[in-house]
Length: 569
Image 1: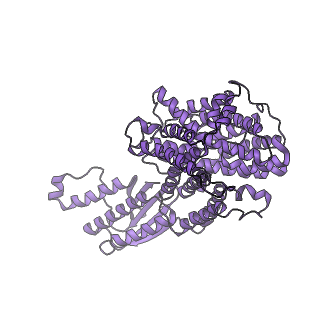
Image 2: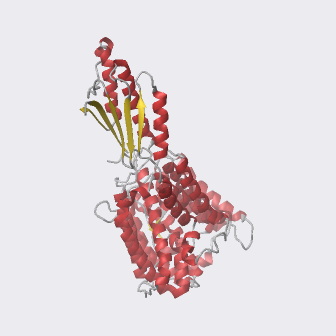
Image 3: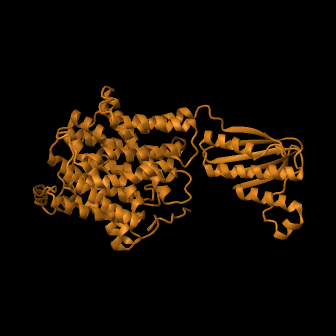
């Protein structure tokens, strides 16, 4: 049972009032609308028109809405049970542009269908792949998602463009006021205002943009001139398939899946104070929801869907993670697809406002990812796993054109900092696992060997294994209690042999020695006994060992005393 963090206003299982739920759902739609920029990038990159882009956005809204609602399902094979909305993410940009240039929109739609099916197959085997996704892997994915937003956020925040090669003071003013309007209620408000920072920022941003003539009124008028209700023209799509383009789409699907693992891991962490590890079963259901959304997008004529990390950042900022919010969010998305006049306000969002929103959510994503990475002890192996992956991932955005000469089939990997870092961190994690001993032994002589020897041994092995620090500290404390108790009572004849073994789920400490079996009472000695009976102090040590370990057993085996301590990991 997850322990709700105190900073949440509405936890994952809570049901906010209807009005609050609707406003929170609308706020998530505002953040999701940033993803529609990716659709424009894809369509224009393959030589399409604005009309085509508008219709593909509308179809993609339908897929996003369906997948967002399915994601929040807490029972059954589909859905993770968390608020983790979908949108047209960056994972499919390169693949879709490549497919569009080779065979037009029908090939993009057909390949997107295959990608969705492939992602669904991956979702079914994820529980068997848990060793591939330790916290340093999922945490880096979340961090790279946050750093990837910098490329989109800062130019829009500062009004920078390659054409002018300068900054726009009006854009900086609009973006700064928008960001301030979001940060203020998040930092200082202790009431309901904290729930709606993006809506507040949106209002301030639009008003300021209008005052300084950065709100494109003519474009807004044109957008509002469309019919109130209409069907997207690409709702009945044509499909084409080409084996030569499938590899780039399958790579994009793999990157999208790994991104979902990172996003859903973060959802689990922010909803559980005692979070320990990724619940792969929940993630598997979430990836399956995404595969349904991507397949539906391809069938209807839209772009592949990915969990939208910015919305996870918004949930952290507002303290509202209730899965109930997913329902109005999904319904609004689907409705906007059929009511283009309502969608107009999002499609003409001033770029400085968009930049401010991206900066706001990126702050949470980057730091949350770092927290996940550091939730385990880091040794040299894991430092290089994270460091190398991050360095080469960031190089994609920091040195444009660096990977321009890579083969076309690998283009989707090297065109995205997220994709490159994700693939590298998974491969390096597997590589650096080679040679890690999962079982180590230690000899202890009670009365001679002290706590320092135990601490150094456990600290070193904890780092090598990437074990959680709190588990290592509990095991260290339990071993210290045994040694001190054995020395005080003379329980051990000679040396005690300690064997420590570890896997992703368990840490076991087995002690064998010749001598007298140690008592491990289930009840704490009374204060009177502690004052009058010197053996009661030792009984207290045995009681503490039982408290430190999740399970403990003492018995005789092959003429030797044996103490088995188990710690859940």
